[in-house]
Image (cartoon, rainbow, N blue to C red):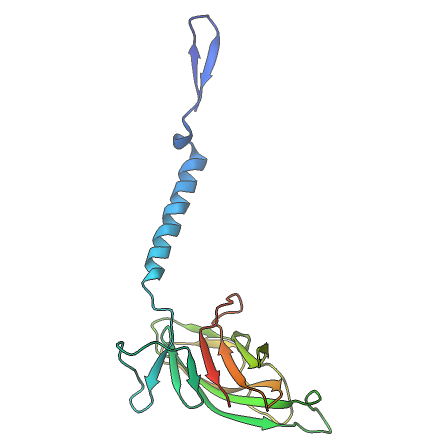
Length: 195
């Protein structure tokens, strides 16, 4: 609240609060402090994938390097969630019902995700991209020759889901499956070499 002061000249002046005592400044300062502390807390989290030993389902020791590229059959762990590309198949579809674009085949990637974290994990096929020599496309193709496609859902702690992701690519090119973690994130976190 501003204070009225009468000066020596007889005029009334309004004395305003200093900016650091105003409500808008206090709210802004609180927001800045919250952002700083949230960044400090997330700075300690390891934002890289690690290879999991398939015989024991344990993450390889922290002394080994974190890696971002894995092979078919290897298990990667990212933020408590394990990803594994079980197998990769190629199909031309059913010519009477559906067929891929000219010069391409359907790439069918069977994957398993297991939530070993403490929180629920939201998954979505749009978190994955099929990389065909740098051209990244969605893996949400529908073909009559493939069943059990992976849909979106939520994995509770300890939950697991297996399903197929389907994309189109020139199978003679270098193919990769890329997990980005979120449709809002541009950072590639895990890559599986498919051939």
